[in-house]
Length: 242
Figure 1: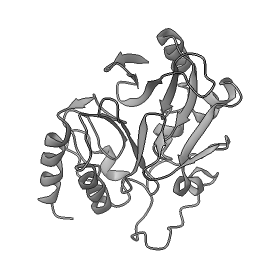
Figure 2 (figure 1 turned 120 degrees about the vertical axis):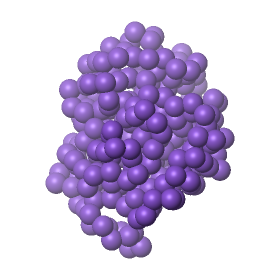
Figure 3 (figure 1 turned 180 degrees about the vertical axis):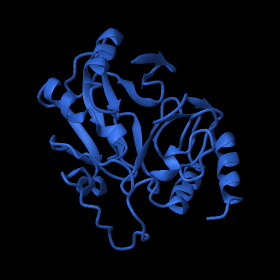
């Protein structure tokens, strides 16, 4: 697993050259001694030891695991990690994601959600979330933003200290920034795993109103350029027929 620091607060952890999760440093407080990490997503299965080693090398423990959504390449190592992390480690995800974390997943759509197949691998987890995030909530330094489209219940997280948006699969960072459902020919996989691409585009448009400086996505490198780049991506998607 490759560890790449990219800000004063964050380290990108990349497995197989393609699947990312992130360690986000938070200062001590609320009874905590010293800094600690929030881990955003966990990658595919088998990543637990490498993630723990990266946190140890960076000099702080993981005290919170925060999930963007329920797909296998984001929750695959949750159970492995939660079994090895201390009791009291927070496991957080959206309420809407809970049925998709069941084994087998419950793919029933909520009232008002657009009709369409919920796609992608949904292995579920055994670990029980201990905190359910909500739109607008401040989770440590991370503002929680509902960004469905790739899958119901998807959230992104904006670090208000430095403008980093942890986008999960609300955006894709392989070579150039893209919206799932509108990805470029050289990385089409998110297109096939996206539930509703019009909603994905609407979520990207929603992000234009935020003070974003860079994008840390579930796939690809960290992308600079903030909302200037995002505006180009949203406009380009708008020129593509649904």
